[in-house]
Amino acid sequence: MHPMLTIAVKAARRAGGIINRAAQNLDLLHVSRKAHSDFVSEVDGAAEDAVIRTLLEAYPNHSILAEESGAQGDPAKSEYQWVIDPLDGTTNFLHGFPHYSVSIALMHKNIPTQAVVYNPFANELFTASRGRGAYLNDHRLRVSKRNQLADCLIGTGFPFREFSNVESYMAIFRDIMPKVAGIRRPGSAALDLAFVAAGRYDGFWEFGLSPWDMAAGCLLITEAGGLVGDMDGNATHLQSGNVVAGNPKIFGQMIQVISPHLGRDLKMS
Ligand code: IPD
Ligand code: CA
Ligand code: CA
Image 1 (cartoon, rainbow, N blue to C red):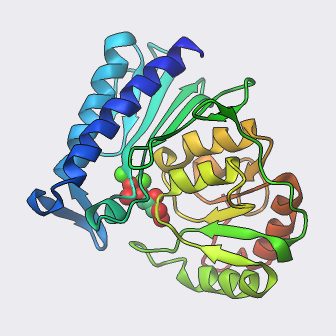
Image 2 (cartoon, rainbow, N blue to C red):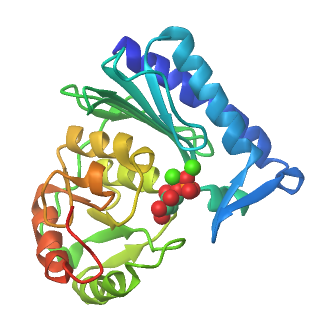
Image 3 (cartoon, protein in one colour):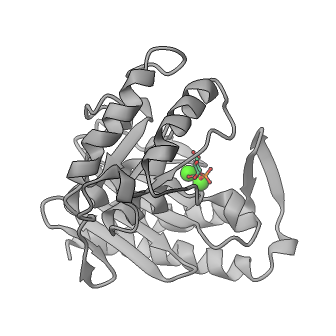
């Protein structure tokens, strides 16, 4: 394993330990609301501190972009930046709904090069290094081989705190629903993207994500042989926050369904 990935795994497992311990006593948690439907608990902060401490112990000059504490370090001093979501799927976590993850990506000159998505409840560790493939625990991952939308299980994320795109989202949803075998909305974008890499879904789409929700998951998918892009299929998803992903056959078919809905409230990057 690449040494930087080894450190990221150590950081993710530490955060996972904090999350698992807290999950045993959810009633004791202090929860606050960042915005409508956007909750944060002390676990998010504690997990994030553990991740950042572990990474900076090993790489003190690297810079950080983390969901709860923001940016730190001088990107001019280092070509490396860690992008961290310490607990992706906080709403699930707070409800004891076991689909949440720790997501850590290393960007080198703005390109994702190492990725960890860790599901502490299931002890599933998804990792990838650029050019070296993606793994679930010790098993090499490949995206699914299905090539007809009608056979596909597709993941998505509903708009839930910001509703400016909701009309376009619903139009896309209506359009996709009868064309596929099923749609799921489990509630952790990072883990959902990891599921595409693992072939558990054949495709995924969500709008309005942040870099920490998707940087790691996107590398997992490309290293597992899948495609990721913006709603128009271009590689601008990390900037726009809008992501479509899938195995190479299904990606193009999803773009065909989604792209006619661009241009109203949904803008291209
Ligand atoms: C959220 C989850 C959710 C997705 C949201 C994210 P958080 O992350 O990934 O599935 O729909 O867009 O913000 O707030 O739980 O870290
Ligand atoms: Ca998130
Ligand atoms: Ca989070």
